[in-house]
Length: 370
Image (cartoon, rainbow, N blue to C red; front, side):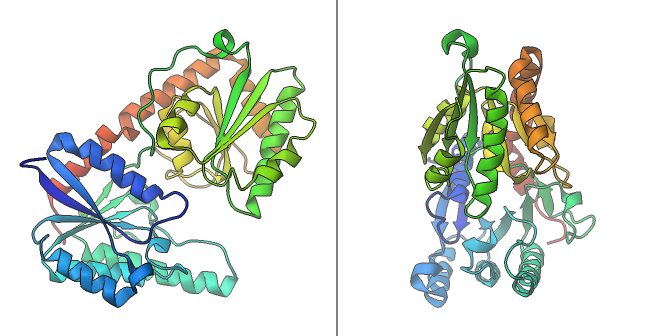
């Protein structure tokens, strides 16, 4: 890309089997190209080389980045095996000493939960400390949650910007009316990604209950599982749907193009991996494909996700989940309204073209309190 500015997307440890942060950077890089920005992905390979060697290599590389932008991609486990991400702060300090302009992309603005109570407290305190240090040291900080919802963020800090994340799939083709016309009246429900054990049992149970309830209404149903965790849940899914008159397909991990195509050919999405929050990538993929999304509500403000065709039901309420899914699949007018809302929200907030434009503006404005 002759004449283009080069930005560096700095990543930590690769996530296995699928790395959503790398996908984010790849799609962002493609969308930045029309802005004459080349986004180069660089990893700090601390998990393979050790921290001392990895930071030395980073220092050598950063000597060539002086004066340019480095976008440090932050999640706790990308910079620590156990969720104590002090290495992210160390990497930022190396960049600052080399005269690099640093922007931190907070894919996780808050502390993680789970584990023993004492461990959760210690780890959470460390993560809060690191997040504050990253914010103070960065020239710009980008959040995928609204700034007002981040409790530790200083009020009025001009170095912070809110930019939603996008779906890590290609823009799907225009969707026609494929339902009753091309599929014999069969309705397709998509489930994109499942959690690990033990939560997967609850999730599959909720999905099974909703689909059983609809099958009792003599609906012709097809349920498609795809994405992370679905192949591993094969036995759980088989047990949950034994004797249920539903056509169940488990695709497992697929490439981004096939995910986009599969979702765009579905009628609705069930999203039951806990309460819905603004950075839920699976829900964003459904919205990008124009799907109504039936999900569990939580206490968090989910703007702009809530602007899409999202139906929220009380957390863990299987009856409400089944009722909402039935309404979406049986009421064609409601389905079309929700589909239009998802497509409109995607174009307004979640398309990579919009996200790239916001990123360029955020970094061009420059910090006034760095």
